[in-house]
Length: 501
View (tube, rainbow, N blue to C red):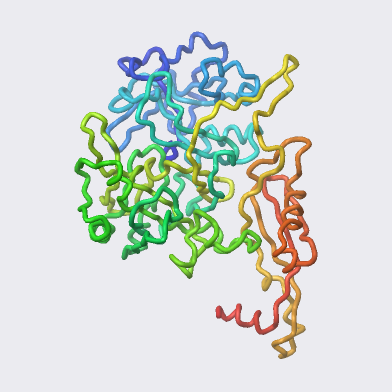
């Protein structure tokens, strides 16, 4: 749950906490040699001493709640297989982690399939941060990729993948592009710059055909992003926009589809569902400029492009197709829109907006990444020999994987204009610097990140022509790599840039 930061699940003393509905039995701490409750002198934030234990609780907007006491035990994430806890690779990531031993639950916590909650907001109490502090993962980030399954069971649902410490690019059908996280801690918050409806649907940010038309909604950007802002919250099932969007959205929806938008159940054929408009949400880019070597924003899936917004082509374009915002009820054989326009301030991009994407929650670099994906779960697990050495990396990329380069130092920031002497045609030399996040450092024997930067330069005919000298490539050892290259500008160009022309 990216909208909270506590981890808690039912322990054996939890009364009427819905064990029959959950994937697992109540946690029996008596079978653990490493389990221990926190004493009153050890209470972590949120915990208050009562009866010799650190008691804490959490309530949620839709009415659910739980109560628990703070405990510690050895904690690690494993696969979905019944014997996954035996995997020595998974077990090597175990840490002593503080979580809540639930003693009571109400509402959906009783009837939901999941037995508890894992908060993943940008907070010191989360598993991601604790793994990072223990040097188990290299980066304060995680990626979440999931989709909707029509069927579920107590054996679990193979509907997605959670990646701790980075991203798994094997899941991606488009490059990962990055929006700006507007806050430093807490909720992951994006800035909505625009909202559009595309006729005749489509599942991705790119249109399927030339006869699909895009309608831009007239929105008040300040209202849409007011208050807490717009958060990306996997713990909220539906999507909620600011109420000022209701009128423009309903008007455009009716004009495009011939149907009125409401949150009442309607009967639809598969063809009618797929023909409903796709919602496109424009999010502020992490960086306004992308490396020209990657091509123009028009050629990169997931970016707005110059046709939609010529002033901000590098912004992120998040596609929410009708197959995601229309929820299907198998019993009623009907669909209900789960887009709501009820917020007095800000909004929530909930789970139905996130589906079909691998989303990187990058606390470390202040950004949220989006890559389109089917989010297919696969059981690729490294094979380990009797000596504990990894024999098969199960398809893990051997070479370093770098994120999309963003411009961190422009040419004009480093040029010496003292040589101009009033001659606008004089050329001045400087350096431009591009920054990339290390999404995967690769494996021993694979290409290093620096080698990847130089290889990409050598293979790009356009870049080699524009910049005859290879770039300087280096990494800082903390998850960032850089390439610096010589650049030239005329004195007139520098003066025009400074004036904002």
